[in-house]
Image (cartoon, rainbow, N blue to C red; front, side, top):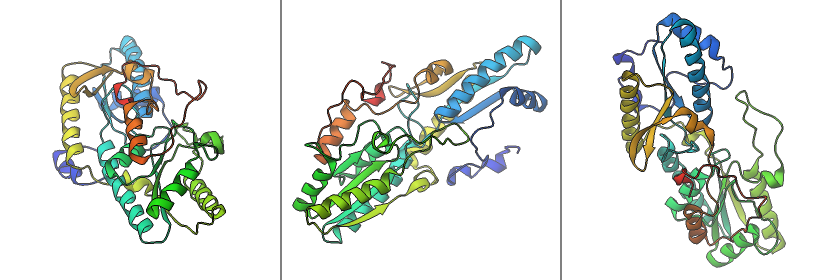
Length: 330
């Protein structure tokens, strides 16, 4: 596929990718052979944590190939993932749009909840093992009463029971809205053994599980509740970029090309403290994927906004934050 100016003139008006995407099948040797055949000397890898790891492996392979044959290849990374789990950078392209789109589902859930006696809207949002979409959608909406993320264990019973919290909210307001991140609840449902082609562990059906548990718990309290479940799934990923992300994408793309044209390689372009910088690929992948800090300011705002019980983490439950420079996890 030759990316002529005519071909790419209106791709910014569409969602998805004209290049297509896939998981697995990475072979740096075959990739380098094909790139040499095509006469490519600049390679831009656009994606998330897995893509950056592949880019780092390809960069290292290109250095070895350069020693053998003199082939010169500039390998540049551009962070693009709705999960926002790439380490060191302020945010990834696509995250802002995904949160904006997720808000439609959250507001629909509130509408459904308010239109039924003791109505509850449960929304499951993507993000894999990072709860950034869920937390930001919760804060942006102002309508969420409970936000469950992978970084914080779910308490179904006891003084910090999320189920009892939902019951209190329903008694007080007559309705409730619950956001569940797709990677939450593995400490309850267990970790799946199956993996996709990219080596990612499949996630348990936490959304349906929480819907059923909420309904069962309220029934034991003689509360006749109506629980509506909304899963926007890939709808929050497949839409075209909003204005903020469109401008951000332009900024990343131009700076990636500038660096490659200057002869740099093995780097990822990104925003750090709202400044455009070039980060070594090895540093990017060292501690990725990152997660929400359950003791940080973002999740503290979630607790304040929702009024949900605070879960006190044991030392075994604490996520491992190996990179002190990852400011955005707070």
